[in-house]
Image 1 (cartoon, helix red, strand yellow):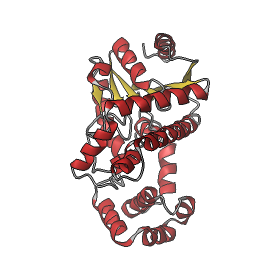
Image 2 (cartoon, one colour):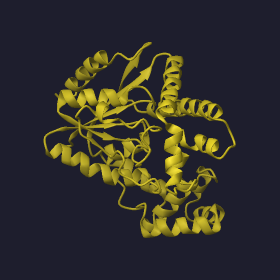
Image 3 (cartoon, helix red, strand yellow):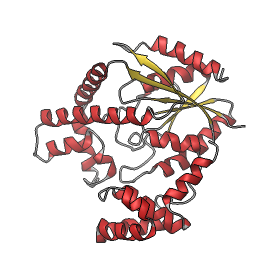
Image 4 (spheres, one colour):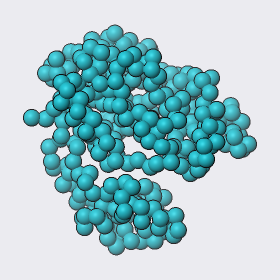
Length: 314
């Protein structure tokens, strides 16, 4: 029988971290972060990684576990997070997956299909070396021969997914389309209960996102970016392409003012929140808790308790 897993999802700045902690304290749980940027060390302010105070004594996993030079995929995240979830279950506690990176959350819940295409493996390393030396065109041409459907579907500039499709084919002899279809046919690894947070009025979400960016700036986001560069982190590193970091690089390079950069961070954060909602709305299993003007966490905890009780979690 699949173990119970709670997923707290929603767009950026909607209160997932707070609700995750409240649920963990009430149901003897532990939080597993599912944020594709909070995994990196040194990216605290710009990713809104929870502080010790915000964690409130609740164990948190998969935060600040990777060097900023590394590139992580959903497959790699799943391979690291699944043993943690299994360990939490084995100790009789409730795993609570909290984050806004929908693909990563899906990868853990399904828990299948990640033996091949291991990031950092020999095939991936060779492909990345070829990308650096030859550019994407020869690799895209190879993908057209091996998997025409995937090559047609992917944008020519989507280097990450082009490499992934080639990687799967070279390691398994199967196209990524066939690989994904086989994976979908398998039952999920966990019996997940999904709780989603979002605002009734998108303007309220935008307002909260803008305030959050202002707080990040006040907390020293520019200094955090400067510190990452001071460590010798390449400007093309995945970590520095995150929202907030990429824009403030321009300030340090003298190509824009801090005010201009922060305005861009706000815009990109709002656009990202919209994409997150689009992804999540495809999941009919999500029980949505909808904020009115303000985030009422007492109500959210009560509603979540009702949802979890109905699902047999408590």
